Amino acid sequence: MATNPLTLTLPTSPLTDPVTGEVRPEWRRFFAGMAQRTGGTVGLSMEQLQDELNAEETARASGDQTLGIELATEASTRQTADEALQRAIQTEANQRASVDNGLQFQISNGATSADLANYVLKSQLCSLWAQCNLLFLPTTDPGGGMPWLNGSVLSIGTSSLVTSTMTLEDGSGHWVLEDGSGSWILG
Image (cartoon, rainbow, N blue to C red; front, top):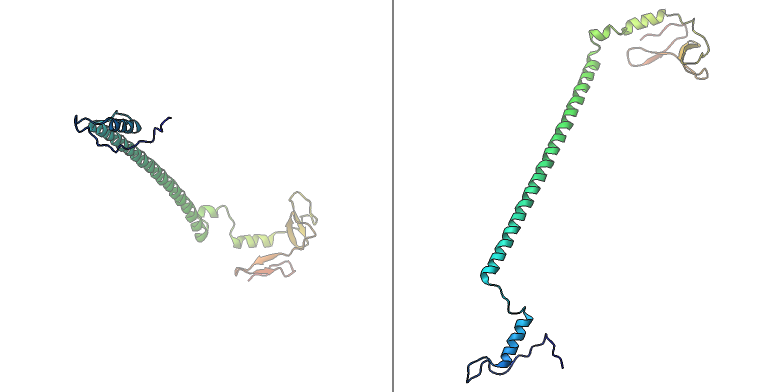
């Protein structure tokens, strides 16, 4: 009959022989079985065990330090990239604001003298337009985006089926229709 190696019977006899003082055989078998179940008789010295624990602690500390350095480097790299992006965004915003301010200045303050050389003032344009005789223009759409007279209205690329009326801003922000006599109603 085979015995289960995981089963140990605890002897009930005294540990040692009262005559010789030696460990009794049943207790020797019990201790041998315990040694077998717990890994044999090979043991570690406390010094060896402490050395292994110290080596593991050193390796973990080194790993933690390396990981900390890598995390700090990553954070620094990301922060530098974020700051560079923020500077680029601010530079573009400043450039846009500068251009917008320049355009707003031109709108608010009117044209400069250099600009005026390229434009006709509104008062001069009205005077020139009133003197303009457009009767030489065709009275039907010649096509190709060419101008033509649709009744008394100057049309460019507009179908003759579209009803057109000519208006003029009177300076107050309102438009006034032409009175039919060929002259403008101003103001």
